Image 1 (cartoon, helix red, strand yellow):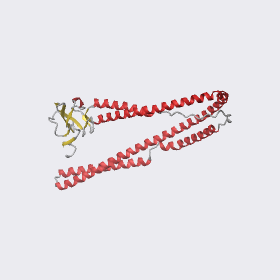
Image 2 (cartoon, one colour):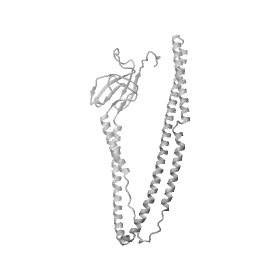
Image 3 (cartoon, rainbow, N blue to C red):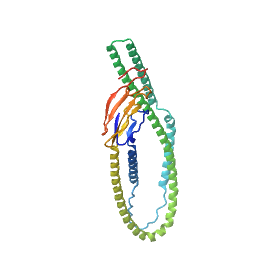
Image 4 (cartoon, rainbow, N blue to C red):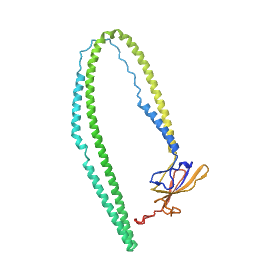
Length: 348
């Protein structure tokens, strides 16, 4: 794999290292981390601005003078308490009814997973039997037409094995997802019970608070008439001032959000321009040639092998997977040679 970078420090692998398909081989991680931190900072600023609500000023009502206080009625608070008690009973009953079911696996998903497991085992057995039969035919030196027919059949069986494996993975994922959903539902039911209990306590507190406020209102009724006119004038002045502040606050927030959005777009554009080279296959780093620099670009060649390097290996190219990474980010495969283990049949 021939790679070209701006700095040799971008190389993230070493000779003898085992890598998986998709592992990073070269990347300007320093610049990427710097830009990601900037992006995170800008994103946090945007989220903070969006989460901050700007309260609108409350328009005061026209004063009509103080009227006699109405009779003390707490029917709303009493009704809220009764409703909260009913909701608490419903939440507790639902939790008790669903707890046992939600603590066991979904039978449909469990059966689906077991069926997929059985299908995968059958497909694996068929592939193994077909491989053994082909090996026997080769030992018997049968005609190439027969071998080609059986190898084509083996290819179909391997395709079915891949499908069975995919179905097994999907069934396991569905089973896990079902378990997660059941756990979430159980937790939500428990939360609903606690919320209902909290609502009941709040409703009871509101009744006590309403009774206290009534007593305070009756006490202050005689004092409020003298101060009513003066407070009305002050309220109107304060309302005008709050309207101006609210309008200015909205303009300031919108301007800041627009500036941060531009900064975030610029950072994302810069991140998109940083090339990252990933491994196209599983294997080991067999060899890394010395760097050669031309016009500010540094080039080297990396050999990826299917097995770790041994003392007898000289060039490491017998089972290498070679590709070329160009400066514009393109990847072109040149050749693939795989040397099988002694217990496997030869495949190209």
